[in-house]
Amino acid sequence: MDSDFGIPRELSPLQQLRSQYQPELPPCLQGTTVRVELGDGTTVAEATDSHIMARAFPHTLGQPLAHFLRETAKVSDAHIITELPSVRVGIVFCGRQAPGGHNVIWGLYEALKVHNANSTLLGFLGGSEGLFAQKTLEITDDVLQTYKNQGGYDLLGRTKDQIRTTEQVNAALKACTDLKLDGLVIIGGVISNTDAAHLAEFFAEAKCSTKVVGVPVTTNGDLKNQFVEANVGFDTICKVNSQLISNACTDALSAEKYYYFIRLMGRKHSHVALECTLQSHPNMVILGEEVAASKLTIFDISKQICDAVQARAGQDKNHGVILIPEGIIESIPEVYALLKEIHGHLRQGVAADKISTQLSPWSSALFEFLPPFIKKQLLLHPESDDSAQLSQIETEKLLAYLVETEMNKRLKEGTYKGKKFNAICHFFGYQARGSLPSKFDCDYAYAMMTVKHWSQNASSTSTSIGRPAIHPAMVDLKGKAYDLLRQNAQKFLMEDLYRNPGPLQYDGPGADAKAVSLCVEDQDYMGRIKKLQEYLDQVRTIVKPGCSQDVLKAALSVMASVTDVLTTISSSSTVGGQQFA
Image (cartoon, rainbow, N blue to C red; front, side, top):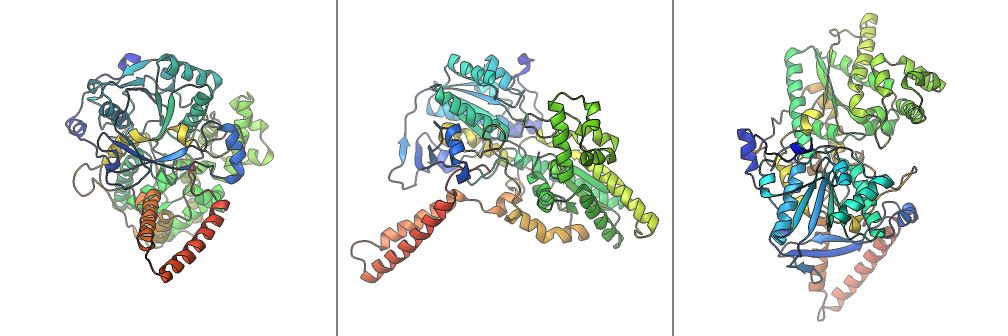
């Protein structure tokens, strides 16, 4: 009920201690003076999509990127803002809950009050439905008191994760107009931020003064580019899952007779599974991106696992832990084709119990092969983005079933001489996403009060069906995090190098630990821009009136070459533009 939102929580001693923690802000966000450097205009991810994007975002595409500067930065054309008018801002939870979401509200509230004590922050109750119905709660110090640094989304609640239909966007426009909002902050993942981009364009076209802001808060870790290196919630969910995985590893090693098949939440892509593997060192992980790249069938995957079980049995190891991202089911070519057929029939109104008779011969054969529990789950209606209900499809049980069947066959034939195969299946998702946020997510979410206007940033990739959309980032199979996994995969498989990072820590050596994948990828785009600017400053210092002819000649030669190379590269790519592919 609406009356339940925003009521004071009863906090445990640990929660009380966490509520007193004051998140750290980066130097550029400290104080009451805002220093901003405006960069180049945004461009599309793919040059071939430029005409599509120009049509979809005629009012918002191409606005300059904003770079916030620390007080000591020496930028001659920086915009320095010392006084800000009072503003009215609305904020809404649209995506699925992620640890740190409450700190986005807290950080925004404090930022508004620091710059002008007369500013107002309104929270919409019940997610997007509350936005449409204009159900609000004014955010105050008292309201926030028991929600600071806490998990969940229960301060405001959430419902549907979309603002998409004509009726919905018109209701959002009316709410912002009626409430005289200067800004609307939408907290969510890929779908919610896609909706935010389109809503910003709709508002601009309607000459609505409300600026729309999208905040990347998702446990999936798939809303990334060179400007957004991590998502709020990803650090926490990976740390919580890694402890659970490590506990299973310890149990498997102790009992020496079980294989744990653990499916991890994370939607279509495998960022959570990769990070948890790098933190906890299970014996095996099968990434959806690997499956898609190699076009592995369900039988290829089960054979890989069976061969691993047999190899470990050869070393008298009859136990292990295998991680499976929930999105792997959509990466298997024949299963993906089956799902597309099923979803097509469901959209046409075919009853679920009649669909099996409507399938093509190949899909029908696969469907009939699958065990009954998977058949039932594949027949569920798809999500709003037309993907399968991945959290409801027990892929770990399917693979355990196929592996057990094959290992029993090998045992009977005498090709496998280990102990009888025993599998224990788990799904880790909901347990972690309601966790207290990690120190990293507390700080990161609190600092998210400064995310840039969608009206200055709208840049998505086109999609072949319907409107342009932000595409979730895949695990980069050429990236450093994946390369680190591949370097250690064989040792993880055979040597039981299990690692237990322990529970979430707020003090001591583990408190400031960051995600392994974040640390190794070295995606400090703005840091490298700053380094380049330092080199250019050095050139200006060396090459000036009075320098020798040799220095001037060398500088002209080098700079001409560099300019030619950069011109060629920039004309064939959009590396400098914002992209979400």
